[in-house]
Image (cartoon, rainbow, N blue to C red; front, side, top):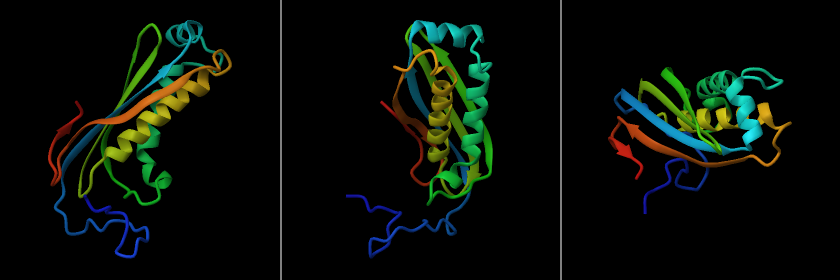
Length: 156
């Protein structure tokens, strides 16, 4: 079994020391989906929601969240992001959000990508919750990462 890196030998939480690692280009993508009613999707698509442009607001929220990840996740290193992008694709039953984050550093950006995708999804929910209280957020996960000692990985 792989050792949990955020626990010391006594089981206490710790921030992992990455000081001895060489910086490398790193990138990670995470995705998730929000299912919503046709009425809510129409408001999003037409940019006619009472709160404003839903997709633009969710995109900005996701990018801002990526930049603040270490403020939200207690043992996460603050990283100088070189990229934070939010892509959204709508279909007949919802919206899929994909967040991609990149840095050149000593640790990966999976947490930033996950945080960005999740906050973008939460923002979509917040923007249209008055119209659809049955929305569900599902399937949030890392789908790819590259760089660092463990190399590239892609979800199956």
